[in-house]
Length: 181
Ligand code: VGL
Ligand code: ZN
Image 1: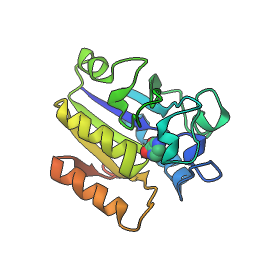
Image 2 (image 1 turned 90 degrees about the horizontal axis):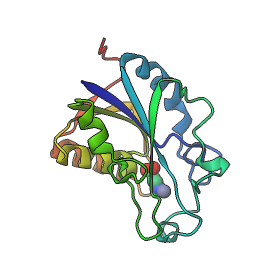
Image 3 (image 1 turned 135 degrees about the vertical axis):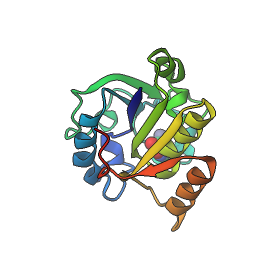
Image 4 (image 1 turned 135 degrees about the horizontal axis):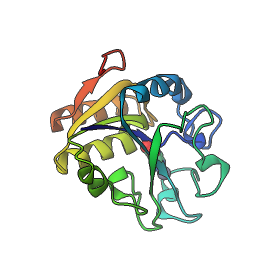
């Protein structure tokens, strides 16, 4: 069994948002199309309290129950069967979807016999990368769709660095053009 996890496709990470990623919205149609190839589609969201140490590093973003934390309106949520809330503590970053606090992602997937986890969404160097690393540690065969992610690129080269870290750890890269049907 395989599953698609859509990471943090929220307003604040898209252009116009408080932590808007260049071209963040361009991956939306790619992801809506990709989701059709999966029987299990889930999503994570950055779901921060109003005050958290995380905002010492980042502009305020994705505060739970605000418009910025909502999924982008162009993301088709119909195929999404479960949402995982992460970054909910005020004492850490909580980048990885495996740190979700409303439901345990690892047991959710294992209960459903998922062995292959496919990732897309935002952002390449933080939540996608940390989720991919945790997925490998939990024993999932882990894939990332490189044309369905986008980087923050705080410093030039950060995205390339993140991709090579993932690759060295064992992540397999795909593009959405590869048919999984
Ligand atoms: C993220 C920066 C801050 C992410 C979350 O979703 O990648 N990046 N919080
Ligand atoms: Zn965040």
